[in-house]
Image (cartoon, rainbow, N blue to C red; front, side, top):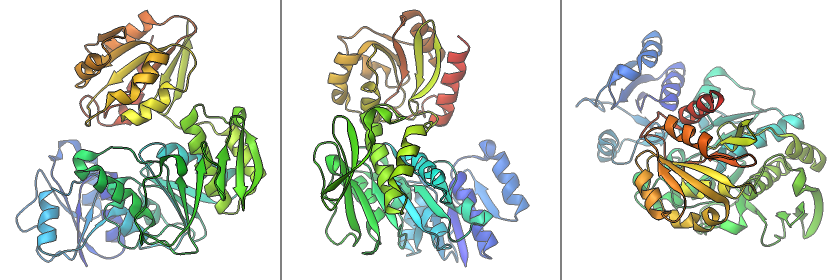
Length: 442
């Protein structure tokens, strides 16, 4: 088969290498120029995969039988629109890789909490001695896992974004999770309805023997006929008949209306209400996979957390510095701002995505003493929160220096930007890494 891969990011390159290994004729096309892809070009040349950078050639799709789109390549992309006109099938890298395996799959999606829940789930499996691999949007493309070979009995715990789910056809996880859905990536999807539909598609191919785990406190109704999975839920507001429930002190499994004690809330290793939700989702995944309550409780107590998500960096002069660079939207920042009882010096900003800062009003008034704003969205943030002590900073380094001057012993300097990183950094990982370097240099 002649396959065209669109996009030279991690997922696109991994898909191209996998397709080549499977014996297909492969060509990779990337709209951006080649100056930032020198390592990628070396890999493609070494594996005799054709490529082009800086645009899509006129005859690109001639004889192409399948297009594999990297995550984030928008529907408005010239090459994807051309493929649609020619009726060439377009699938995501996730779909392409999943077609090559029979492993049991856990797929986790949601606007916020995906990475933490994916890593925590893999840790719970590890604690119980169940072989598993975390992959997907968490950093290692599924195609790379398949390319390197994996035993059929190993569980694949896949963080799945709306981009990846947007173009699936047969992808059918044994256990699917929808953590929450709030407005995000609307520039890509065009509307909240389209974004929601992409999230819901995680369950569309599931069978009655499969499990769908949903958040009862943030449930955007799943369309009828979307899937046949057995639905279980988690909540802190209403106790489900089957799933998981957290009251003020305890996390319980609820099975056929009967409570089973899991652990006390204060024993959770991760702070904040949002992490209580993430912990319940991961616990239900593990329970659905047959892991014992005692092993689940042990894992929830000892999990160390995820880099760039409420990550403790250091304490200096009695001030705690926290890296929450992964908070790329307002909803995620809302959770972060409620995770600490101490007064907060909030560093925020970057590239907005139709941000609604009114969602943060209560949290800001209650928890934040000072705002330091950076990036393209700085003026919007300062205008909205004009009644809070605040300052526009000329650079990221300037913001951290100002936080150092402003913060008092017992307070928290919290970098939770509520914005994308692309105005100043390549991605949120680079942004978080720079934050940690600057804080550790104080």
